[in-house]
Image 1 (cartoon, rainbow, N blue to C red):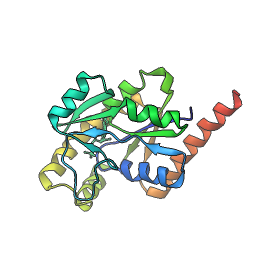
Image 2 (cartoon, rainbow, N blue to C red):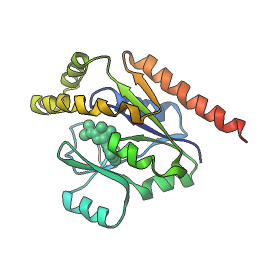
Image 3 (cartoon, rainbow, N blue to C red):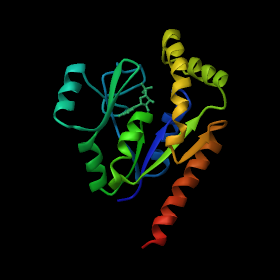
Image 4 (cartoon, helix red, strand yellow):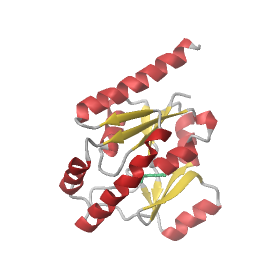
Length: 191
Ligand code: 5GP
């Protein structure tokens, strides 16, 4: 198995962009596609960004032990599918999880995943507000809700191995690449 990387951040800090950039630049890195009960945004595609399912179907999957972890975030369920991730591992892919702090905590209890945990932070709250408004995906009420969530999300930084500030996308991305490369090197030295 390669590596498993959890990338978390308060909503709007750039994590989804970075996750996608990683999988585009490195063919061996795949993103774990989560299930969610959230409604798709206008630019999202079922089976690409998420598996969009009903609340009933999600609850049914919980009872069938389908998830490594699941959490309720902003009134919706999100969950990491065991089956999906295991298939990626069978094909020897490295896996990136774009999940929140609850999911990261749960996932790191699976020791065999040997999870690397990175927390991405925006430079400050004002900048985060600007980014949330500019990305124009959610209405203002949802933006306010996400900003309120920011304060409680950042309390969980200490559960992570690395904190990276997303002041500038390219340099943030470069730091994450460096972390991954160092982990790969460390692994090689044990072989
Ligand atoms: P969004 O609705 O903006 O796509 O995601 C909201 C939050 O849910 C983000 O912090 C995202 O990382 C997190 N998330 C997405 N998928 C999962 C998952 O499978 N499990 C958990 N715990 N969080 C997830």
